[in-house]
Amino acid sequence: METIQEVLYYYSQNAGYVWEQFYRHFLMAAYGVILAAFIAIPVGILIARYHKLSIWVMSLANIIQTIPALAMLAVLMLVMGLGTNTVVFALFLYSLLPIIKNTYTGIQNVDHALLESGKAMGMTKLQVLRMVELPLALSVIMAGLRTALVITIGIATIGTFIGAGGLGDIILRGTNATDGTAIILAGAIPTALMAVIADVVMGWIERKLSPMKKRKGTVKLVEEPVV
Amino acid sequence: MLKFDHVSKMYKGGKKAVNNLSLEFKKGEFIVFIGPSGCGKTTTMKMINRLIEPSEGSIYINGENILEKDPVQLRREIGYVIQQIGLFPHMTIQENISLVPKLLKWPEEKRRTRARELLELVDMTPEYLERFPHELSGGQQQRIGVLRALAADQSLILMDEPFGALDPITRDSLQEEFKKLQQKLGKTIVFVTHDMDEALKLADQIVILRDGQLVQVGTPDEILRNPANDFVEEFIGKERLVQARPNIQTVGQVMNPNPVTVTEDKTLSEAIQIMKHHRVDALLVIDEKQVLKGYIDVEIIDQTRKKATHVGDVLVRELLTVDKDTLVRDTIRKILKKGMKYVPVIDQKQRLVGIVTRASLVDIVYDSIWGEEESIQ
Image (cartoon, rainbow over all chains, first blue to last red; front, side):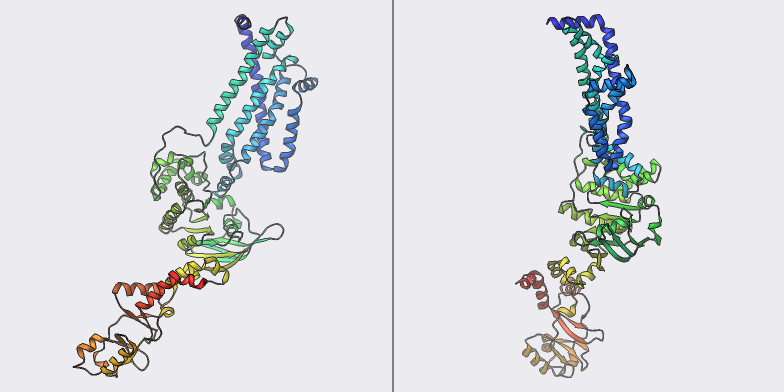
């Protein structure tokens, strides 16, 4: 009980600071994902077209994913120096795999019959992509962004080690202080909360974009019997 | 309208999917490609809109070589319906139907009117326009699939087993509906199926393929009447051939070739002798050249025997005859409708060659019901 009161006390005293770090934390994660999306979605589309490339691209993205976050930050720091940009870049790298993978899967899973229909009706390749493949793969691609965002919110916490700020700052401060449990919690709880909220919100968007779920809940008219 | 000129399709490894195919069809014909799986029927169809490029030869639509056209433009001018229906699940029925018009950059208003018009063709209300495909039944979805192929008023429509995935009852009604629609709109249809019943029901021209080779082309009647070889016969199926027999047999094949006759110069008592001997109640009257003159029956003889002596004096000259080359089904109708006991069969020179009696009809019906079982035994 005492700890909770301490956490609340910390918030009441440092509301501005916590909010600022919360916001900063979110922005880092979001920038990382958005930048990654610009690269990863086209790459995903590309490897869905040229299957031979997919093994190489996927392996590379997989390797990136296996590098421990702290090691990655340290190496990037050597090249890019301290600061927020280095962290955003690291988050960008970690976002690549889930987005590429989901874009690839999403486009691969579009029913072949639909692609043939589109082509046979006289769509150009670009029109097939724009009018058929992307809309149908959209919810799967969104699922990739959602995974990426949750991952990056977690990883952004350690950005504090190279001076990027964020909620990690508060946690680190707590670990340095004597009896810092309350301060650690004060940083950790909003981080977890942010990840959960991001997951829920993105999940909602994902469902909204799903082609089959449209207009769910509207009254279905009685089907006419086939004579 | 549609012409294949020595078209072949070879796949890598030299396998010939379609071999040297030459065909020509008229506008407004319902053409059905049929054959066992792997016979090249779908490949042949897909070459028409260049989803598959022919390796050799050329294809002409209205005299234009399609290989010289832009494939995208070409496909917008040809309707396409597939078995999997292929409606886009993220688009409304309205958007699905008016997709090709949209690609052709028709104005929005025109697209809407067109979609409504089309929906009326299949007796669906305009409220369906705002629905999504998954809200419709399978049969309704394929109706929309067909409408989509008609949307830009394409004069040629390709269909790849469009009714194959539907339940038999829906399929039947859709086939009928579609055949009517095709005749009404005068479209040329290229239809691929492996279902002989469907082919016989819908086709104006049936093209039978096997291993990429053309086996036979003809109207359903022609193919049923003269299957080109054992393969076609087997493919049509004995059952169908037997069932189809009354429809395609000529009178010459089923008639009794030895009718009981009498000549005009015979006396009535001679005539009655003949009747008694053959146990019949009527005689066909012919002259020495076998030309049919009329008939006499036992009632006439009974009423006139006091007044006349010769057959020539009393014969009834008006009687209905059939030519030996007419189809049995037409004859059956005549006999049944007019309640006649028999119909004499003549050739082009009015010579009597046989007779179809009610007993012959019984034989035909017996054959079509039990004939096949006997042939198996």
